[in-house]
Image 1 (tube, rainbow, N blue to C red):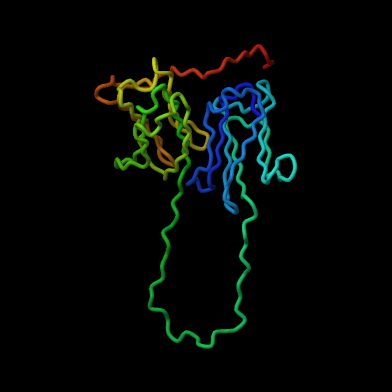
Image 2 (image 1 turned 90 degrees about the vertical axis):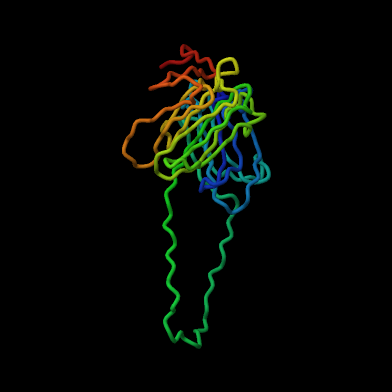
Length: 281
């Protein structure tokens, strides 16, 4: 159930390890569905653990003075008859809320046992060295949001590590056919310093006459980067993930674009008109 600012609401279902995305409804997807109840059917492999995330771009959920929004997930053939409610949430969730669930009933294999002892005990110690698996490395979830302009085919971005190894790459052309849409992608990074770079093949960023674009990076609900689309061919900023010493973000732009220093005020304005006089504060 959406509130009257439906364009702000987005949601996704991913595998619990964050490696696979099964469905995403990006910011702006429901722009023409103000205050409507939306029902969508999603088919998921049975027995796996999933993560459902709902996000409000402005950070005020889907409730209260903007409407009585809520959401729920059902499993089964018919929401009104044979299905089972997996979870429910009201619209008072601020910026985001996450639920973890398992689709269907995972099969639990029966335990195996041997009632007959081995007739031939091992006579000599094994000469094969034991193998110690590589310890797991913690990876942090980072949410990348890109608001595209009227020519999405020109826009690209990438994330690189300190040694310039490209971790994830969205080359220009990747978003062809997604003009003016807001794209939300979830990536996972190990603790460290990284560089985020945006690209535009036409040298005019993704703003202004082509529409007001922007990008943002969030991790664990904290804003890492935010900037409007005013640049020329490229623009880069550095950010850190994990428990690292605080460092100042480094900013650079392509030689053909003016050098930008310090914080740049955003020209992006959300497509909404709030009338605060409609409610009491």
